[in-house]
Length: 102
View (cartoon, rainbow, N blue to C red):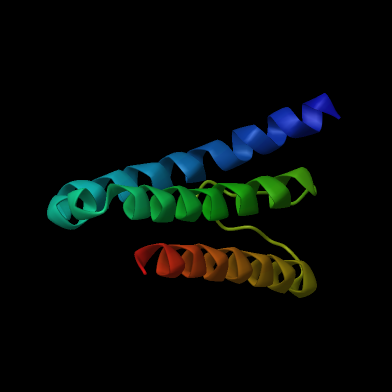
């Protein structure tokens, strides 16, 4: 079990690192918007990072191979279930941020 977790972390780490680099770049480029509401920005960025990282972690933990270019050969039902979970998490983040803005 521990080996599966370590292997899943090794597979998801490069993709998570890539997402973190891209989100950091977005934060630097859009610093004025980021600084205007830092709590909302950090919440959105952490949420997006977790969606990417956890998706790849779950797929790797389930035994699917993650290629270096980020492609995962998973069956359609598994892939669509993860898309549904990711969309649900994204909607929850948007709702939380919308209620916070009021």
